[in-house]
Length: 274
Image 1 (cartoon, rainbow, N blue to C red):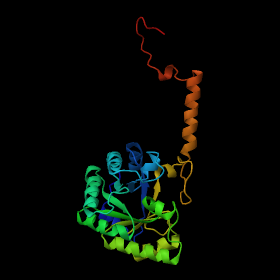
Image 2: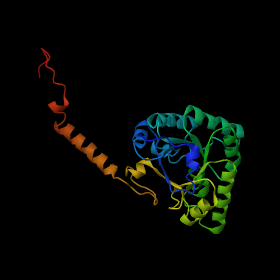
Image 3: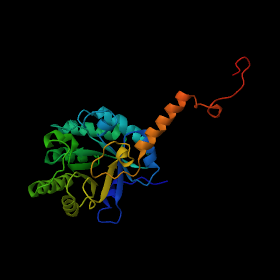
Image 4: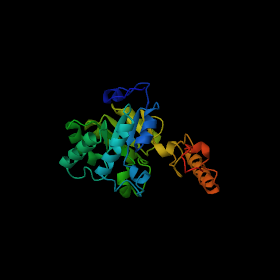
């Protein structure tokens, strides 16, 4: 059985040979399978809005939604470090609101840290949450909560000016007290520069091979999703396997081939013979 990694141990992977792996998942059953694997961390992301709730994006996911899913993931993965996402609106415009919602997610959800999206605008909230005693993972680059401002889910940092701003933002997030920072949807060279300049580890998702660790999303890794982004490697094709199994079940029910005596309780009851 693996031992849950800690915040100091995560920070100690910087400039070491150890590259951490993280899987984004949202429920007890999938968390239990991740817990049984060699994966180090789980992110309960607000992408559950799309994956679990059928929303068009992450906007619309509430703090209550996050607490509900996080606490069940924590139950399913007691030996895996769990990151709880702070959803859209959880800290916009109010330090007190940021600390209150981070406290709910951390305490009620039972996760090991919270993740906070955003650039320079998020820095004061990150600092306040860290001061409240809650470990924070930052998140810059393609930040889905701000996708409306970006014109959709688009790669960030594609110009020198934009890359410079990402580097400046990453340093500010580190200074605010984040122990880890997620780099999403940016050119590999930009992520490499940020990783080299920071003293805290970077977690990449769609940011190339130079980050200190890597994250992918559960249904993408397993090939459950019909469409995946360019940066996703499918490690299985469960979509085909699952649909084939469901079709076979439906066909056998329709034909009467299921259930057979093998899958029935065959105790003889007087007056109720078959």
